[in-house]
Length: 262
Image (cartoon, rainbow, N blue to C red; front, side, top):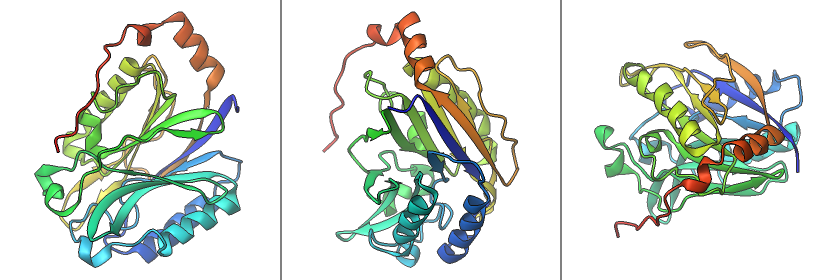
């Protein structure tokens, strides 16, 4: 088990529907990380932006971006995560991939597809929550719109870190920061949100506001809005354990089981 987990949050502009250019840009950013990190977090749909043109830009699980991610993880000796558009068995998914330095892959398909943008008409929603075991840390990754649904994120004392990767527009950014803080407090968990910046082809503006909170909802990052930048933070398993022992709020949680709509 590793007590201190060091994490790089990459807040970046994205080139619309251009996987090659986005991989190139992220390679430069990742190579600029001089200190050792355990985990690198990229935004939602980091190779394309939040597009509904899945047939044009979808990749496969043995495609160029997955190969690139494996190479990055190996070279940096760090796990890397973010979401991209994957075609599998005739369906399209907004899929988060978590790549270990060994090349092992865990995946999570976005459960709450964003109906306001017709994401539900293009992408197949996932049905399974993912808990990752990484260096003694339990990590629960989710994607953007999932943030609005606290039941799906409820911590049954089975994770230590909750991650959201996003393309969350500027007009609703107050909800982004408020809900991330709420998820940290109610789940007694570290919470990290990594959002993009810039303007996409649909004229949606993104201001970033990538952020990390501790178990009590205190902000532990200083990343600035609108900045194309990387911030490295460290979180402590000892602090998490001591805080949960002192404030045993999770022990009083409601027990329930989520039933799939199908």
